[in-house]
Image (cartoon, rainbow, N blue to C red; front, top):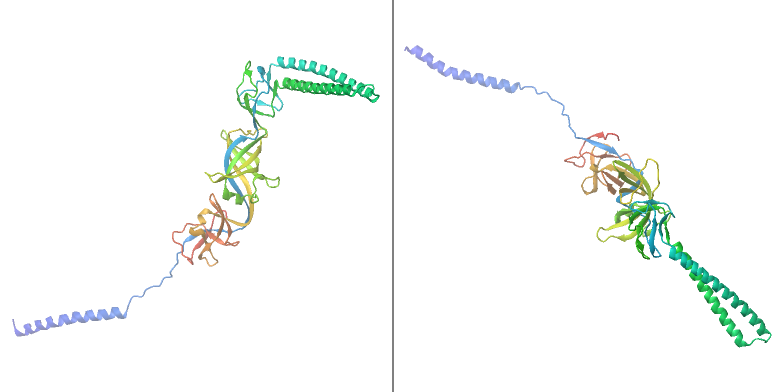
Length: 392
């Protein structure tokens, strides 16, 4: 290869790398001096949306709920007071039979008692005659004694005879009255309007005095014994320490609810007394409600043994805010959303938690917004969006 070509080849090998480096450096300088322009975008803050309810303090009357079984208010055992054979029975003297007050229920053979009454009447007449004779004789001897015609001994004997005749007459009267009473007792009448719970008697049966022949209960009024937690009495308008029968101005209205078949009925009653003792096992006090068994067309009557629910009218409390139970957080706190849409933790004074409601009697002002949404994370001062609860 000629020397000139060899020199030209070496020149190109040296120059080309330098040109590449120069072009790269020029490109780098251009990029550095002409950076791309970044467009700025507004940052949009995303806050959680919570449902709120407005605090509205109102006068609130509480109720205490319980349940129990209907019992008869008056129940008695029918027993004969004389002995004898049963000669007649009322068709209603059967299990479940219904009877009116003073209705004839049973009759015992009265033959012996009529004979005893006739005999006592004869004895009474005889004793009355003897007493009348003794009284006239006493008056005669007393008159003779005043004129010193009769002796003191004669007067004493006549007085003795008079007292014996008087005692005999009184005894005869008592026996006659007893015979009359025994005759009347051969017929047994209903002591009240009611129903037969159990009967154990039949025609021809010989009854002894005091033998149980039937159990009866009145149907005009019934009772329901309601178990009430001791702490629940705070919500009832009953003065502290009150026991036994309540005064007329202390009785409480009670609504009784029960089912007959598939239909539900209600009856009005009154809490009229408390049993005044705490059950050692259940720690409950029993209140006794009286319910009038009114016969109303289209309404089922109460039945003994029916299971019923009861709602007892309690005290009125002022300025109570009712919140859903879901608004309550740990340590009796709630979340309040302030005027700047920030969450604030708030301690409250709870009167009562009933079902799905929380009754608040302190710690909230009228118009404040209470968060009822379940927040997984809640920080005091956190900003939120609010949405009113449907229907608030």
